[in-house]
Image (cartoon, rainbow, N blue to C red; front, top):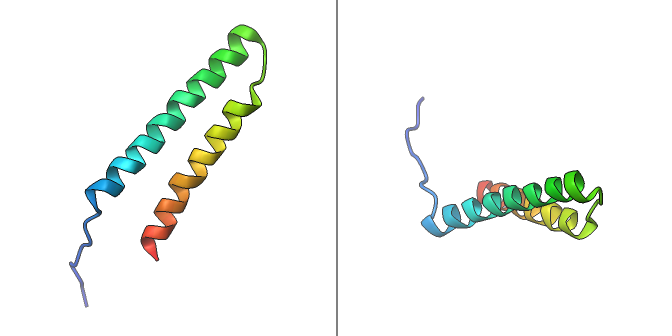
Amino acid sequence: MRCDLVDEPNDTLVSLVKFGIGMSACLSAVEIASSAFLHVWNGEIFIAISGLSGIVVDVFVGRKT
């Protein structure tokens, strides 16, 4: 038995996930630049990256339930 029913995601949800992924990429670039040029590990940026990654993963998991 085959079911071709597809649940389309909400446009707001898609926009928020794209924003979260983009911000994680930007913060990762800032952390890499800080480590490469200043030779300093910035814990606050790492915490922000971890938080955003957690939010994006939670959105995906919450969407499936």
